[in-house]
Length: 321
Length: 246
Ligand SMILES: Nc1ncnc2c1ncn2[C@@H]1O[C@H](COP(=O)(O)OP(=O)(O)OP(=O)(O)O)[C@@H](O)[C@H]1O
Ligand SMILES: [Mg+2]
Image (cartoon, rainbow over the protein chains, first blue to last red):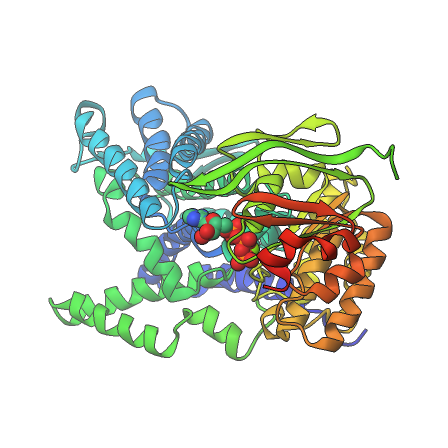
């Protein structure tokens, strides 16, 4: 066997990407390392969104609530209950799973535009709740987690999550775990069923699949990954505010995934990174940066109609997962 | 074949769409092992009737009994698991997946059901290729389903049905749009399937019906107009007027 099979190639590529990101920790200037750490955490959010939208075909406009469930689950328990980081992170994940189960159970009774509206409404309710309980959340102003609470305990010692290098490496670890999980998932029989449900739901039902339960599991897993991103964001960057539950944080993952490539494992990372730098660069040159961003988006759609990775896969590298 | 127990029975099965009685109180019984054809003019309610059986459409009244059990309230996916497979009148395959992946989705679920835990990829390949070979698509395993000819897509649907190893296979106008030579092969295929499974076949092509059916049911306006062996149906005056000769 001299030729590599598509699956070894793709595993090698993903390991390569993670190793390259690891090397960047030591190569990037301080500012860019900070940007990358943020992008890695938000790319996890985008990967979670991709599982629901890209693979399962569920166009949700409410994923900010899963991110925010993780953010608040971790942030509030640290701030008010003085939990340490590990259990707080667990609380964030649990909050995401519970919200995803409830919302999925109700919203999956609808499809298409109705599903978009129902998820949007639920997310809006969640957002308003973060404002309503302002005594605990301080609403838009938000909570700043003190630096001494943001330490990660290990048998061997403590990691200070506010240290730039530690923060980068923890963000990368989470990213790598979720990337591996998604890669495994989409190549497993369950992942293939999700794609097939997206392609032809009625046919899947008539092959004996319980479509509702499969979709619900996809929403819950998606919610779990998004909550992991939110919880990590709280402990790594030390800020928890209502802004993260607002509508733009439901639109952003959709945008990142579309730009990077829906139903492509590396699409969310590329999309998030690309959008971050476009906005960053544009806003350093002009105050009308949103106009530049809009123009760039139009360009991407014209030249990469299936997103960056999606189009690369279609034209050149069909083995990309 | 007098004492064969029925695999499928319907009792007063009906479905209305607004004021329209698409299926109107149908009592029907299908013995295990039979190959049975349903014929009737367009809009007679044939597709709706079999959709009530496989659970795609909910009945407004009546009951469906499969293998002695009342399945009227069972959701469609459970009926498939119980052994009822349906191939769509309008071709419904996964156009972006390869022919093999299409069949694999059926096999995969079947293997999970049989509690073959590990779901070995060898068993998956074996069962999948087996179903493709049965319909003569063995050489097309790696082709994207959407690029197959129309006739081959229809055969792929049948292969997906076969991969479910059903006890009752419902074929809804499977030969529609097939060429004459494809129809020849198809008749041979259904004969072979009929050795192992009970087949309920909706068909407009009378040559196919006469070649395959042990018994025929004629539907018109949601009701059973006549039922019997092919020769009886051919001789039936009412049927001739309503349908056959026009
Ligand atoms: N979902 C639906 N909503 C409303 N009316 C329907 C629906 N499905 C079927 N009908 C109507 O019910 C009647 C029976 O339709 P059905 O498709 O069962 O007929 P058929 O015998 O299969 O016809 P064909 O030979 O054309 O396939 C038709 O008048 C049809 O218009
Ligand atoms: Mg029909």
